[in-house]
Image (cartoon, rainbow, N blue to C red; front, top):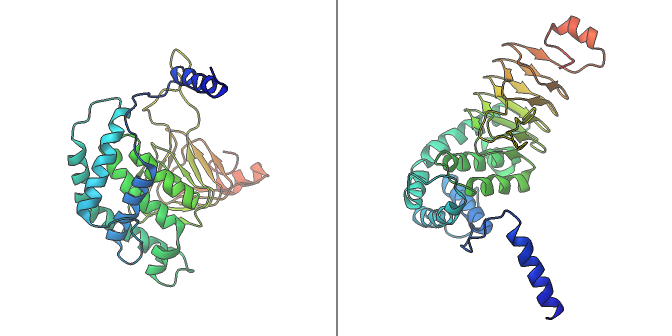
Length: 286
């Protein structure tokens, strides 16, 4: 046996114990999924996005259906709809997706003095791009499509530094400014008129473990953010039982693992006693 044949056998042996799905079937193509994203955005906002392949809705639907079909091997349950039906539902959802994105554009335009016109938000703002891709992926996540929504949001993650899981629930008029470093976990729920600045993490505080010591999946792990909340740079909010009440302001570099009531003002200070005196029980130190 040649040296190269030995290497090949070693690689095959590792495959058998890897835990990977070794079906031999084609898997979803990252370039194809990215093309679907860009083509769909070019349909939603003509002239603002360049289609990678063909931006006709008919071809987008057909290409998406093929990617969904290849992803089905990664599903833990049998799909209720066919890949073709899910792709059709995706196309049917585009008017609502565009309606939501227009509210996001408005939030950025009204909330950032640097935005001189609404078109600038579409053309220049990485936070808007990440949000747009998330809203497309969230449609497919709702139909329990495996892998494809994650490929979509990771495309935006690579381009913008913003990591929004497709499963997060985000309301209208969503504002991401400066973008880089934002993380929004799968079970996060965000209300309307919420502003996030760079470096914000909406994450899990800890992972519940099963009897074998493995993390339990499909449970609420990430926080709820109310309406009209502003979260400044590098704030970290963790935990599935953590609620940020409506009309709250979360200051930069804060660490929050407990709920705060409506109308709270939370900020970081090295002088915890002074912060508590000024801001009350929900000030610095959490």
